[in-house]
Image 1 (cartoon, rainbow over the protein chains, first blue to last red):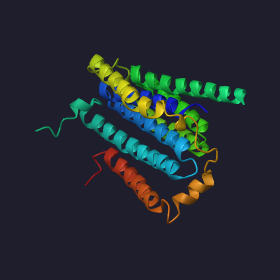
Image 2 (image 1 turned 120 degrees about the vertical axis):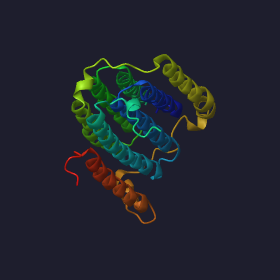
Image 3 (image 1 turned 90 degrees about the horizontal axis):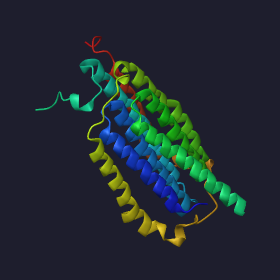
Image 4 (image 1 turned 90 degrees about the vertical axis):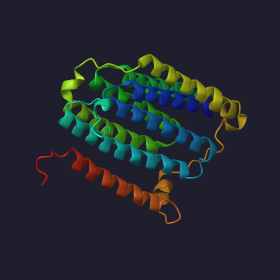
Length: 102
Length: 176
């Protein structure tokens, strides 16, 4: 198999691309897509470490499965919030949802 | 054996390119609907990496949950906020953010990954070729000495997220 650091490099690159997406896109849906990319990078990292250091234990797989659950819940609630903001303010740009600004 | 390891390395490169290329498509494509398609491509590449890491159950869950549910959810959100997706959307502070992302990547490589795991020959190969099966994972998720409490909390979280999403996204008119 390829050495562990190759998986880590791919995961780090995916995480950086996700960070760039979150920081630079103005559309709220695209920002959530960047968060999904970052969660995916973390999951690849976890599974790679599980495979190379503790493949006979179940902990790594269980953690990765829980991250799937978190990602699904985050996407559902985040998209519901974005659709509500769009309905009320006709904008999906996060900076314009400043109702709570003092 | 040399052929096998070469084909595995080739598959790793292919799935990595698919995953990272899809991610770049998400980051750079101004048309948001095409962005969701690129997101599906990227998630598919990650599923291939899970197969290479001998986690076939996670690969199947990745296809079913991420591509089958979450990406479709994103497609719905893009279409429901349709009038803005045709606009050529602007980026904010693109060069500064690009510098931040590249710095983060370089920091991860130079500061953490290469000195700790790159030159470490112990981690070049997996410690064991014996891998836990999906049956073991399923048993551990409902074992009282395993993950039954996090499992129940996760299911409660999913229920709460589902109800919360319905309540948040509902029309405000029919509330009392």
